Image 1 (cartoon, protein in one colour):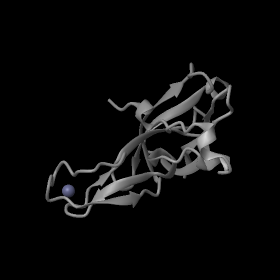
Image 2 (cartoon, helix red, strand yellow):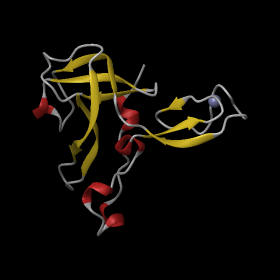
Image 3 (cartoon, protein in one colour):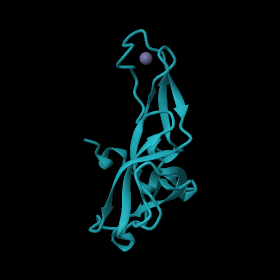
Image 4 (cartoon, helix red, strand yellow):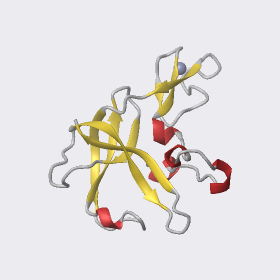
Length: 146
Ligand SMILES: [Zn+2]
């Protein structure tokens, strides 16, 4: 099972990042699609891994910037969303297989009637959510039809 929760950006206390533009506060692998690649066997990993499960100690791991282009493997239409997302319902939440192989979950910005399995998608940088009290805004990658 894939959990969407493990991709949540890390919260940074406001006071720790004064003077930094708001959208740089929550950099994470989810935000910039940084994963890893094993140069020994050529396998790609997202989220990033520190060890290649195929090559074990022989694997040489390096950071890899995914393009975010891929296709819809499966999807569901969200009708009852978590707090903060309720204004956007209904919306498609899909498992996207990136061109390099790894799969990730993400919101697809399109009419729920239009999404189909196998549809090509490209990444877009969008607001993911907002904390009501302190106004912290989360940004990350969503997808649109390519
Ligand atoms: Zn490997």
